[in-house]
Picture 1 (cartoon, helix red, strand yellow):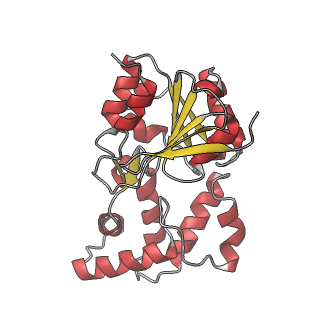
Picture 2: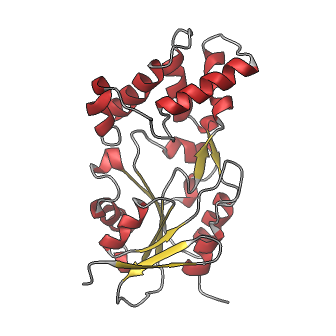
Length: 255
């Protein structure tokens, strides 16, 4: 089997990666990344204001904006990555996507490096990320998942994450459109390790060579090493279409 992948890029910035020298099989299943592909974290200002409110504090707009900027620099679950990880958090940070306790401790620890003067604020910020209100599904997520379900194409979500995202999909009314979840903290493997993609294919009982992985980062493109086709989408902000319609062009037969 070839040991590298051949990328091609369309004018809209979508990158399609296939195994070098391999024929393109009909797509029988689709794997989706979660963050940045199916949903995005809520705007930082909203995140900070909502978390402070659960602590009984109403933040003025300027203070909320300043806190949001500092917290994003410190590092937020769902992105961006921290500008610097304090040495005392280094081990937790390295394990954040493998263990629930490490994920919580790493991100609350980063938030605590910002002195907001609000008791319980770091925990409130983290709890916000665990719930459906802390995320915004892309507008094309539901239509694309529905089209795949109507066509009989099974779907799995493959994510480097340290908490259960199934309740989010249930709250959004999307649970019936996802057949399996390969979450790093449950699987014990993180993307780009081929093992997590192979586990997802096993959950769906489909050959990797007949599976398409859809994501937004080089880690998602690691699925090529497992034998999958890969579609890497350009980044999109909350509330804006993420380009998922391209999936249907590849996964569904032409009329």
